[in-house]
Every structure is written in C-alpha cells, then in structure tokens.
Image 1 (cartoon, helix red, strand yellow):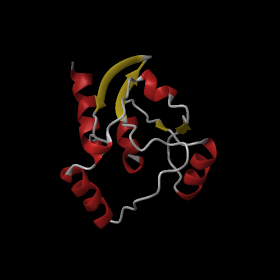
Image 2: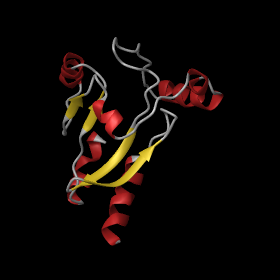
Image 3: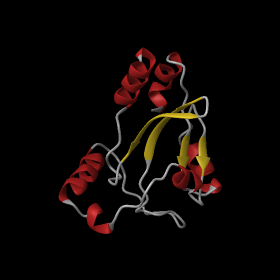
Length: 131
C-alpha cells in the first residue's frame, strides 16, 4: 500500500491504517518503516468494533491453506513475529473505503490472511467513480 499511495491519491483517496498495537509499539514500527499515511493505535479495538470486525478461531488458523499462505510469506522474506502483549492474534481485520463520512465499500473475512490486493482496491475505487 505504501508504495502505491500515489495511485490512490490520483483517484481522490488517501489511506489510514489502524492497528491494535499500543502507541509506543506503533512509534517503534514507524521509526523502522515510515509510512506515507497515518498509522493509528487502537489498543482497545474501538475501530474494529465500530466496523464490526470479528475474531476468528484457533481451528480456523490451523487450516492447511492458512498455514500455506503464511509459509509463502516467509519464503518471500516475511517474518513470523510473536504477538505483542495486549494484541489479539484471533482478531480479523478489514479494508474499507470511506468518503464524506459514508462507508462506500468493505472487505471483511474470518481469515486473517485473506485481504484484497492493492490492485483490487484501486479497481473498486474506479468502479465506484463510474457508478
């Protein structure tokens, strides 16, 4: 997302990321990996609740296809990190397009590895503009 933020801005959108991490953890992360958009701390998961994001189950995380996705990520250089204190490894996320205070589009899933690609998000924005 960070590498493609200019594509979103050309279409009139910007990005905000929300993480369940504490502010000090966010600050450490941003010191190592600056982002061209805000990364907000939500340790109480208020935004997660507002967007009605659910928790998954341990059994769902143990499915072979989920393990394979994590394995592919590691093979591409990704790291498996320990879950920081206060974070919920079963909390799922989502991707949302919001304009003028209105929810235009959402993508939620009970699977934490299933997220839309940046290209998919950009296409949704283009489709919304054509409607």
